[in-house]
Image (cartoon, helix red, strand yellow):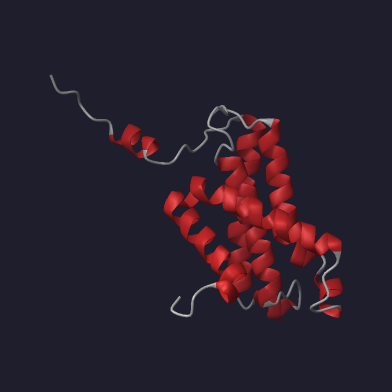
Length: 168
C-alpha cells in the first residue's frame, strides 16, 4: 500500500534539521534576517554616498555579513542533535552571540586593527580561533557536511602548505 507523499514533509526532512521557533525567538530570528537583508541593500545602493551616512568599506561589510550569518545560523539550526526544534535553548543563544561577536570583531575594532597591521594581540588571536571553530561548527548544519570537509581541508592546507609535497 503506497502512502501519499507530502512534499512539505519531504522538504523539511531534507532541510538538515531547521528549527521552527515560536514567540520572541521567532521574532528575533526574523528581524535578524530582515536586518541582514536591509544591510545588504543599503551597501549595494547609492544611498550611503547620497546621505554620507554609514559608508562601509569591503572589510567592514564582510565582517558584518559574517556576524549576521553566524548569528542566524546558530539560531536557525540546532547545535546539538538532541536540541528541541520548537524553541532555542540557552546554549544556542550563547553560541549565536559569541559567533556574532567573533564574526563582527573586525567591524567593531576596525580602527584599532588598522593601526597595527600584522601585529595581532592575544585577544585578536583568541577571537580569530574562536571564529574559525564556530564557523566550522555551523557549516555542516547550514551548508552540509561536504562544505565543512572542503573548508577543513583548505584550512589544513593553508596552515600545513609549506610542509606538503611540491606536487600539491
